[in-house]
Length: 54
Image (cartoon, rainbow, N blue to C red; front, side, top):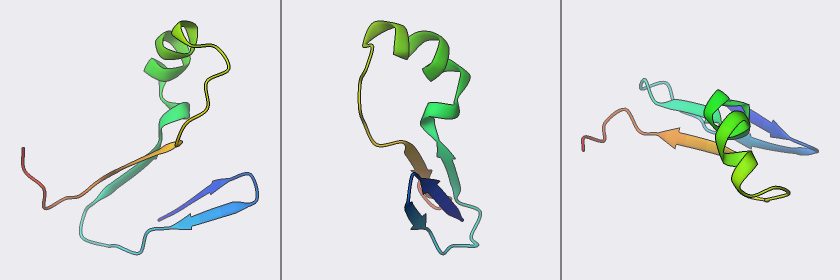
């Protein structure tokens, strides 16, 4: 899975069912979180290990 952010490419080489998503593309982030802290800068992706149980 590759996430591109500007000119950077983050390559997560896994095929074990893990999930990777750009957080700033989530509806919650755009409609709720951005309204709380305008102009905020942060890491833009979330990685969830398929083998992690919590």
